[in-house]
Image 1 (cartoon, helix red, strand yellow):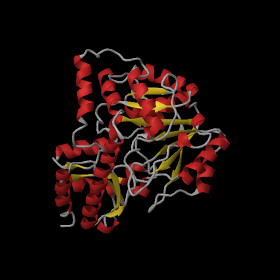
Image 2 (image 1 turned 60 degrees about the horizontal axis):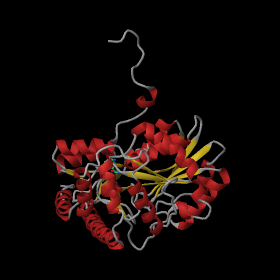
Image 3 (image 1 turned 120 degrees about the horizontal axis):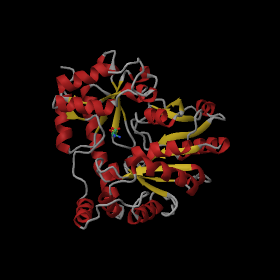
Image 4 (image 1 turned 180 degrees about the vertical axis):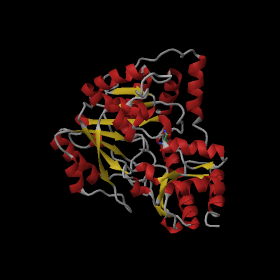
Length: 390
Ligand code: GLN
């Protein structure tokens, strides 16, 4: 019992809503529905990576790694990013290993944001970026990506920059839209970053999941941008190990120094034996990444056909492993009610589109489906979805 009316909860956290993505996962479990809501694979992670982590545990790599990442892993990251996507990163001064890309993003923002600073965020956006803004104290300014190709208006983007702008968050390939930002689009953003002295914080976790001959371009590889870009990535999607929580940040030495301090005091470090497993995975040859891309394109095509057959209008993704759909063909007013009905009546979970927009109205006729699943899971989901209208 408290004796005053003072809330025990911080204003900061009171501003949060619960993660809709994780909430849908719990609802799916409750109703034994197929979970096409939260983005994680239901197929095994690579054998060699798992073996390396198990060997590390057996070999007693069970104490803290160096706070900014085991040397073997930082060296492996530097060697890998040099050939793809073409980033030069000194493992001693430019790489910080984190607990997934989630921690990479919040540590990066906390390292650069002062009270009153603004960040530019494209919407629809991966829902964590909202609370990331609140936790770091940044004021977000949203710029809308417009369907069907999720392009942005250059004037609208330029108008979002001002003297208070500290950073812009980019996610390419993009969750939830599947957009892969082109070199031209990234150049427009880079020019604004240079003009206003703004940091590009770029989440490239789906860098190896691209389709239709699209090329993933890293902001840090654009002329002059390495000095003001923070590149975020993780093992989660590329090596199908979302539960390992091993991610990393690449940034110039000055920024890295700041990010390492935040990271150290927030988490001390990512799990040491899992860092060894990821170091092994980063040494996989190009055939691994080509195989990953081939498997995902088949899954995308299967899922898009199934969704269209069931009455959803699909925005064909060119990257990442989600399909954003338009549900206006069903004639229902609300994405959340529709998503709940889909779990309970049909047995398939998806994410309501409104959770990807600060202006919720923009997502009321949208649902996002994940297709990072085994063929058998996707087939079962397709059979269930065929009954949506019935
Ligand atoms: N990035 C994944 C998604 O958008 C998983 C999110 C999460 O729960 N960490 O579904």
